[in-house]
Image (tube, rainbow, N blue to C red; front, side):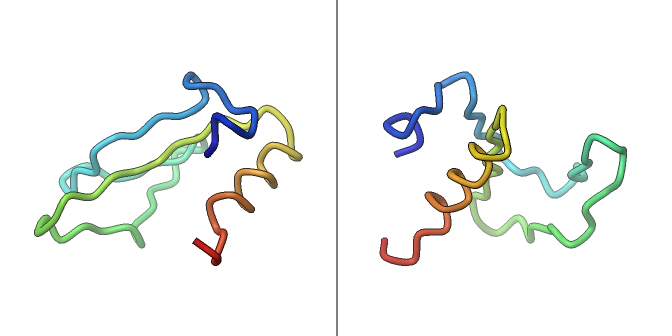
Length: 67
């Protein structure tokens, strides 16, 4: 869905969430709200948007409530 809407494979990254590692943003702030309990597979989707319009498009695509 993302690729068919203009994103490239290089824009998309999926990593396994490890509850032993924190999620840190570019400013070095830890996201303590995201905690996995380790009882199931959990993944983090990272998407590189080059413009605000791309970020908005990604938001609309990924939060589509009709799916």
